[in-house]
Length: 398
Image (tube, rainbow, N blue to C red; front, side):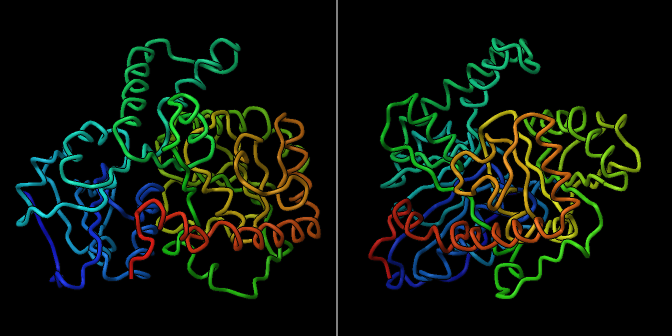
């Protein structure tokens, strides 16, 4: 059955109406859901008079609980289907007021951008991970003879690329989650309406680390663990993990015999069963990321593709865990190689940097402290408030 949950709103107090239309629910279960929670929680905290409505379809197995969404949004419209059409929303709404801003999140929901145009003054489209850039990266890998490419996927990938580009022209503003995505879509569409709002540190996941003024990095108190946090439903993350296990892991293991790699994140990792031994710990999906990261001496972000979130680099940094990353994972971020992070492309250098941070506690502490300081200054959601106000037309709203 369709479901609407709302709380009383004073018409006189409401200064702006925003509707979020999202394929997945704002929740702590996945990176996209957490990003939406943080953005809208910050808007509600700073501008409580703004009316925030949500139109989505709840999948408990994917989204877990959506209790936080009910606390943030004034009206929650739960569709019984995944379609999320304007006509479906009309059956749930008791009023026909137009929205000032409609925020359409995820590629799949771009299909109804034209219909939502009739309901809102400004239409925003956030593709999350760019399908077009992912396809382009795969093509480059194919013709460059690097990595694997499934030729059977070409027709579908071409169609998704066409869709994404057409959605960019239908929206008033396209908001990307990384500089890499925004630069690519801006170049392809020639549109000045493509911009970036990089993902900040979640106040839901890292509230303790964000609020602590004094933070003891103390790598000497930790075991020889390296952590890799990622969503393994993404083929690029799966390929990156395989690259690390095949090319980097044996070198690190040989130099540091008691080293352990912790692999943390949602997704099917059964294809990695042959790597399972005492030096590889497939943790899988966890309710809280911070404890898994905090116990590690090093965080890694190997990357073979360039689209999507850059969250893991900041997640490591806020907990004082220095990172070793592929150069492409650093694109658009202001961390400096050798100062507050290590960037390495070849397996040999990647392994060398991991070994250094595992075995040199002073170096580890120095880089971890520097990474945390930069992260606090540049990558919290509060630091992005000006950009959020511009995107959601919040300037001058009280």
